[in-house]
Length: 289
Image 1: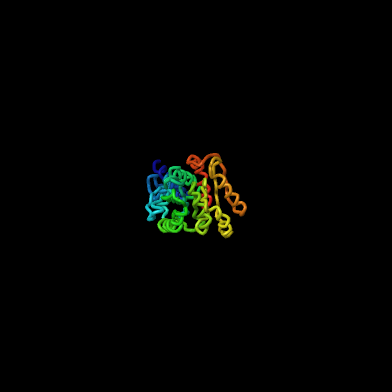
Image 2: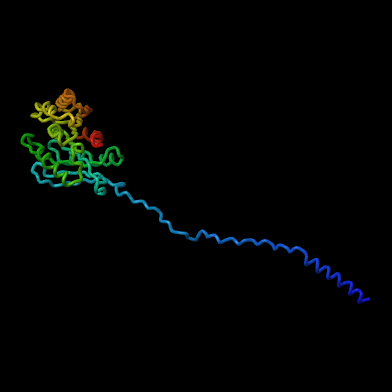
């Protein structure tokens, strides 16, 4: 009995083995790829230099004033105003304004009126272009103009000296002169007779020289049309020189010379000139633009 059961189990085992061998092979489970490591935030891929800005040396700077000795008995010294950027912009050249003081005053009259501070403010606000201001001392301003060599020394010696020693634009278009009282008289004389040097002049409460009255019309007619200077005249309604200044303005109109004429309230005094200083500088700045 035992032997028959054994023989019966053997064929069954053989059949099971055969079926297992014929079964399709099982597909292995898919493999999950391992991600590549990502650089952390602290890993440096390459250093990049941050851009740096060059500070502007002119920012917040003020103009400077120097007193310069000059080898002339008529002009023993002069003051010169440098705009704020003059020491730093070594390739830049500038227009020049020559300002003359009144009779019996010193070369610092314009400085006392506040010309340096006013120029700083207007230039910083870009209301006028930067320019040099030269203020010569007319030592013998109390003397008659016929024996005072100030004017000739100004045009023949001082202007060449300034152009040689400072960075100026040495042409008439970038050179102007102006003056108060007697200085205004000088401005009229040389603004009309040396039109080759000056492209503009301002006469502020001018004291026109007596001997120049009879020459003014001839001087005006001798100026070539293309070289007529720009002209600015102002005076107070209480000024003793008002009648003469008005006659000069009328003559300019008769000769068809473009000019500005301003009659304000005030007298022949520093309070008047100080009140109109900004207007003067704006006009000169407009000449240089």
